[in-house]
Amino acid sequence: MRSAELLRVAARYTLGGRGGYLSSFLSMLSVLGMVLAIALLILVLSVMNGFDREMRDNILALVPQLTVKSWGPVDDWQAYAADIEAVPGVRAAAPFVEVQGMLVRDLAIETTLVQGIDLERQRALPGLQRALAPAALQAFANDPQGLLLGAALATRLAVAVGDSLTLIVPRGGGQSARFQAFRLAGIVASGTELDESLAVIHLAQAGELADTDGGVHGFRVAVDDVFAAPRMGWELVNVLPPGFYATDWTQTHGNLYAAIQMSRDLVILLLLSIIAIAAFNVVSSLVLVVVDKRADIAILRAQGARPGDISGIFLRQGLLIALAGTVLGSALGVLASLGVTDFVAALESWLGVRFLDTDVYPIGYLPSDLRLRDLLLINGVAVVLCFLAALYPARRAAQLPPADALRHE
Image (cartoon, rainbow, N blue to C red; front, side, top):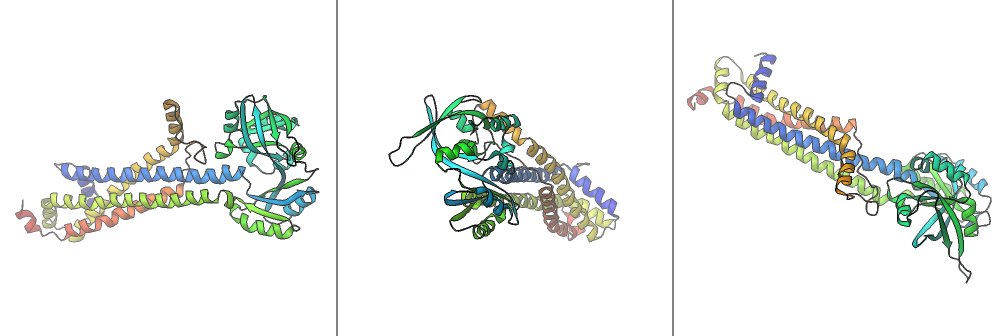
């Protein structure tokens, strides 16, 4: 039999016709299993990829990739910044001053670590610009008393842009605390856990409150390769004079990133096993189809069909099931991946609840990142597994004696 004829017979067994309702029903069950398994795997992988992307692009863009600190205030920090930026692999270095204090608005009080930044140098670090509207950034630049707050922190303080707040900075040695008024110039809404505690003022104001006499506490460093941050930290400490030490994102957020990667790997193994189960469901379906089509097989053998032709029919039926399952499953998975973020946001709005809150989770929404590589991998694995699953039923059909098959009819 020619290949086209084998394919036509396999399609008839898959789609039904001439009373082949049982074989069609079994084939559709196998296709449905493949569709659900593939769609689920694509959707979950897209969500896990979304968490990975948000970790890289948002959280790691806002938190310092690498921080170089000194045990005391750093004078002449411009020279040290130039030394840091001269090291290969370093994109930019921005000075900072940290002030521990309390933000007060009417009866609302929040303790926080306020960051003092040099806005011009901070522009070389793209994180703040991504999470802040250009108008708010400009308002902060034009106001020496300007203050930027994370969205969740601003909500707890019940403040809006333009409102005044008071920063209370405690002082040791029996000195009275310092009070400084600020105006809220902008709200940073990154959708990450940083919105819970972020508070930013100008470097000069932070230096006055921290009594650094024009010095800084250290530098936030952006590097070309975030995964090289630990190595770059050692290089910078060796370049700078004694008294400096380095911390990097792997120490502050490394466990979170490792947990995301481990969860992604476990989910891939789990859902690939679901595809494997769906593929091996093809075995039972095709075995039942072989039993149902014993008479047809015997007639084809009597008409001159070789065992290889019979085997080819059921191998093609397995591939047709795989192709139908992968095409429909991929289409459903792609649609679900593209719409899951908006769907969950709409569901949260409708139910009035938050499924993801930055008090608990690193980001406050469900991200999705659909990747072509994942689609190709999932579809390739599904087709290969279905082909392997069809080998046993195809071999059994090819070995079926025609006389015995007709005698049982």
